Image (tube, rainbow, N blue to C red; front, side, top):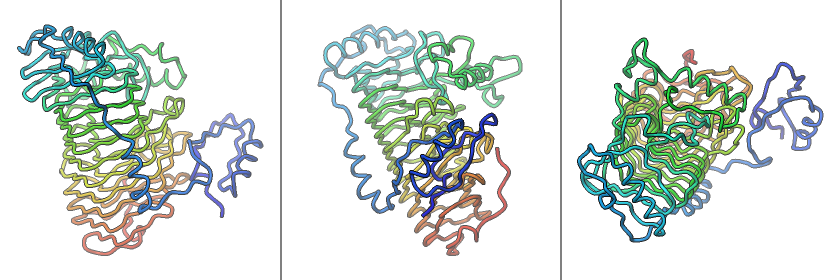
Length: 508
């Protein structure tokens, strides 16, 4: 049986190459012959296994899901406490306690691990850098207030900013190549971000920027150019004068990570951003902050991640799964995989459970269940954003028991027309996207699924789902092997996606 080549591969359409396109291939041998015959061509492939077929939804939930869950085990810490007030911290909300945090973490690490305890009260600090076997425990009634002075987030660290690697400001809480790290407790992490400090750096008037003020746009463009030219990361230096905001919590290349219980407010940019991490648990976290790019939780190129019992009320995507932007995502080629999202609540934001858009390294095996999403200011419930500049193989997404009160645009959005849209040489692939037992109370569209002419969306399946008070039906462009089973839109059973198709809006 012939398989569509576009079901498997990115295409790099360089005009200087005499690339021969084969739209179908019979088997692996034919593909290898294509490679040999096209020695001068550029063909960019995602990380796939030939002959691998997608599991049915039932098989995925009963076999793969339990295996992933069994591997995700939060780190445990010795029963030793290192209270920051014993190292000079003052609970007055004014005194700089950065050194006290550093000393307490150092002592905890040298002693073999334990809890660095933040007692009740307000503590002011700069960057906090975690070390192996350290649990930063923010007690009930405690607030850590992070300085808004950019200089305290130097020296620059190895970081990833909007999917691009660079040397930039430290995250407010940062860990690099550590094992067994945690941020726990019932206290508050306050980044104190506002239009008067971090947020105007975005360059938007609604975030406090005015003509003549500096912003991130020149540095962002420069970083993008350096990434495309494959400039070594150590030479991508973006500190003072660059205006590239730091993330809030960023464990980078860490193993066994736990973020639990804390409340996060006033973030400069992305809230919880594990990068290249393995075995990550994010549990009972409350995120409530509405600045620019205030994504709630963005696991990026991570493996075995559990996000559960969290509350998100954000200025951007509530959860956004990522794997690197464009050339950097393809250079590292490390997907986000084996992600479980369950029992979470999403209020305001651009998207609820989102994949993308910095997604060039791919995503596979996403499971989400028993989540509630509801706000007139939440644009999309389940969302994929990608395009031909990003590319990336996105496969095996399973959603069940999703309750949507209302969203502003579409309940299910898979959009290849995002930003650059079809402009680019790296064909995006989405396949095996299954939604079961979803109910929605109000939306503009039930679904907005827009593939590209040469990159259809494969295997979108919606089962046992009800969409009420839908204003405009659905958008369905360039889908292949899509199916509806026991689906109702505005009380009417719909068995053919084409039957609810409307003219798509022009995007990106």
